[in-house]
Length: 277
Image (cartoon, rainbow, N blue to C red; front, side, top):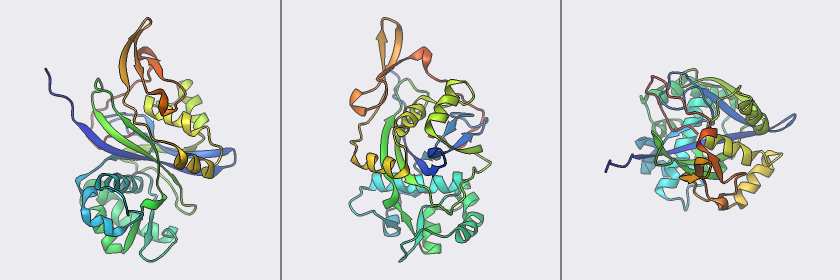
């Protein structure tokens, strides 16, 4: 029997804002050379790094009380990844209630964004040097997906919602992601259906669930009141061929999809960060 594939902890964030036509979510387009989900439209996120697990980070995180080490690490990872990939930083100066200003954010981007991505510094070094607290209290759990056993790479991914700071300009990093867009969930799904966007199955399912909300406040309040049911798609045989099945209690718009109807997962030539969903 072959050894089971490792399951990598990961986290992703759905940054939200109220647009002229309703709720919008920030998404980035993965680089064609990335080794996993090349060219896909995804939410900012990625693997949980060892540096995200540093226990000293608890002293630099708002809303960390009662969180397990794993829960804090995934929240730290998603704040770090959002900063690296979108330039948005969910953090406050210690002792302050407001998130950091746009002017201060520009300085932090110039100093830390590329260094974090390259592994030349850590999130702990940044918050300790700059006297910041990570705003973990602004993250709301939305979903939990684990890749199926048949997947070439398996990720244990926590999905979070967060209201995007009004004065933080979200923009792709130009390295792992080559484009970005604020888009209504229904529009993203329609573009994927028409073949204009490459959106993989977990992303489509979570966009569909998010599309039930019309505003940021509604999305956040609904998520807070919802039970998170772990989804690990199961390969099943049906009269019409193999299909993936997910738990009905997870409250998605479908519980089974034929394998032939799944959107493709493209693989590029690179070996940059993975775990995007």
